[in-house]
Image 1 (tube, rainbow, N blue to C red):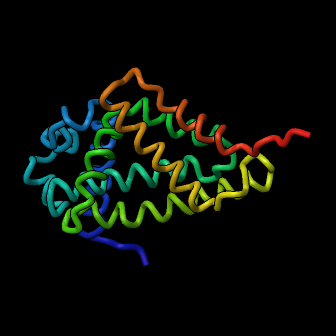
Image 2 (cartoon, rainbow, N blue to C red):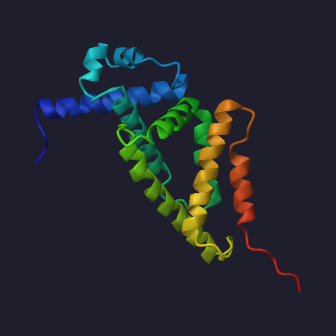
Image 3 (tube, rainbow, N blue to C red):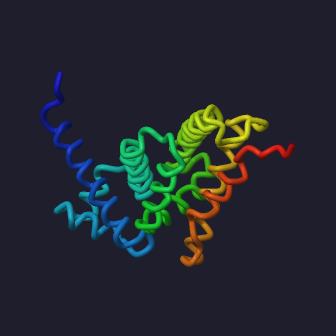
Length: 193
């Protein structure tokens, strides 16, 4: 049964707000964007905007969820290194979302922070997706098999998250090269005869 009335309108407005925030943070940065700008884009006052969220941190967490969901749909089948490179390029083209991700990931270490459950749920899913990608690459003979794919997945995610932090401090850092280097290190060692 379709939802009707105020609830449906409220959900539509909430999605509009999240989409506007995602676009503004991507274009203008996390640090330089005020929620007033997001509110104005949605024809709301700041208190009107906050009516749809428990707190500013809740809104920012929901923006990250939306970012992850839309990226997941765009990259549903990650079967090649190129699909991961594309995700990294998207990050380089949306530095405000990288800033938001890194800031919220750090804040999420506090179990009371609204982003805590998002990251607690996100990392196991990401590790499994990357492990599945690595299993596929192992089956192709492109990745060494002496380290379990689950451990390699944690390592690759650590490389990606770490290089994003370095890139935020120094935009000359190439975010893609360390991932390519990590994948090269995971290639099977050719045995000499």
